[in-house]
Each structure stands twice: as structure tokens, then as C-alpha cells.
Amino acid sequence: MVLSRHEIVEVPEQVLLAVELQVACADLPLKLGPALERVLSKALSRGASPGRVIVRRLADDGQTTRVSAGICVAEDTEGDETVRRTLLPKARTARATNVGPYDGLAEAHEELLAWAKGQGLTPAGPPWEVHLTDPGDEPDPARAEAQLYLPIKR
Image (cartoon, rainbow, N blue to C red; front, side, top):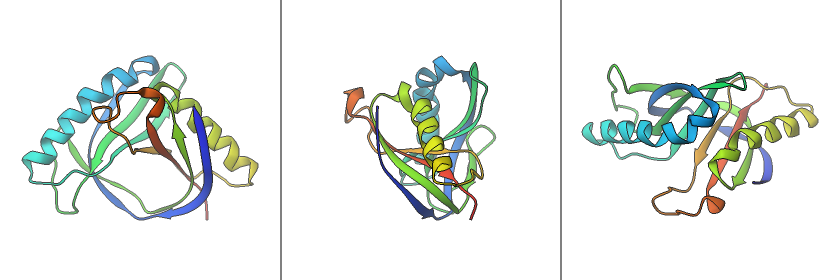
């Protein structure tokens, strides 16, 4: 894991098609792929041009995690009862870039939280990550790249 380029950025509201998962923490990397395939299939069936993958970490007790896993889509894209249209709200965030295997992302989020608190910033909601590489295009997990975001109070 290599966490770098810590900064404060404003992010606009984003429309996603997403599914919610609650799984054992260790199972998350295995469950994300099939879930995102369902989301991608729904986006394509709706005529959307899918954008980046976003995984929002809603809750984590160390044993299980609850995430919203989705794909950015155009504003008018509709979901259904299993793949829902949702909004990632406009936010002021702490952001860092992580390079390394997906199984290190929870630790990377903890590092970003520690950095933010060290800067005197107060978290204001669940963090998320934007995946910049696709495992189909970059099979080496050591080169997987994601931007991590932590909403902070203004």
C-alpha cells in the first residue's frame, strides 16, 4: 500500500447506479466483482455510458462491512429494485491516492482518517473510493490505483 498526495478537494454531486452489500470484511474483495457486474449490466441496459467505479463504505465493525458499490452514470439513468439510482452528495473532502492491492483499502482509509484528524479536520460522513484502474486492464494488484475520499466538515 502506498498512500500519497493528501489534499482537500471539493467534489460535485454524482449520480450512481449501485447495490448495497453487507458481507464479512474478508469477503468484500470476492463479492465486489459480481456485484459490480450486475450494476454494469443494468447501466448498459439503460443505455448509460458507465463511468468510474465508486465504493462507499457505509459501516464496518471489524467483522462485517456494509458498502454501496456502484458506477457513475448520467443524471437521467434510472435503476430498479436491486440496482438503485443513488446520489453521492456534493462534499468537501480529504483525498489521497492509494496504489496497492484492494485488500489494503480498509487500512488506507484508516490512514486517511488519521491524516485528516492530524490536520484538525472533522469527518462528516462515510468515506468512499474511486477505482482508477480496472482489474481487467491491470491484472497486477500491486498496481491497482484508487482515490480515497473522506467527507469533512466545512
